[in-house]
Length: 80
Image 1 (cartoon, rainbow, N blue to C red):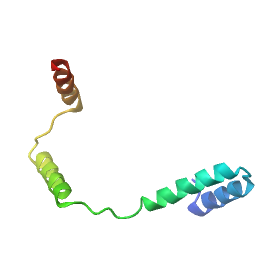
Image 2 (image 1 turned 120 degrees about the vertical axis):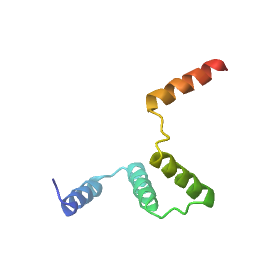
Image 3 (image 1 turned 90 degrees about the horizontal axis):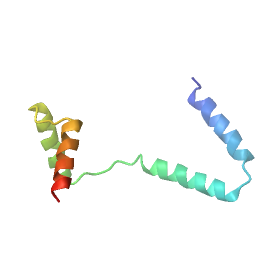
Image 4 (image 1 turned 135 degrees about the horizontal axis):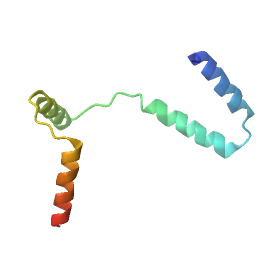
């Protein structure tokens, strides 16, 4: 597997060969948005409470399979 430096170097070489301005602008937007995603997200108290409730559900086995949930959803939709 290539090291990060090798991957970065190959990408730089490819970027330097691109002449299409729109493509470069789009690539810049992608790179800019991905670096913004690395920011820490602050959760609201409600979101934290929901996560704690989910953890408790897992801890106490209050779970349902995806298949059972799909079945419930279909039944609910058919009632409408």
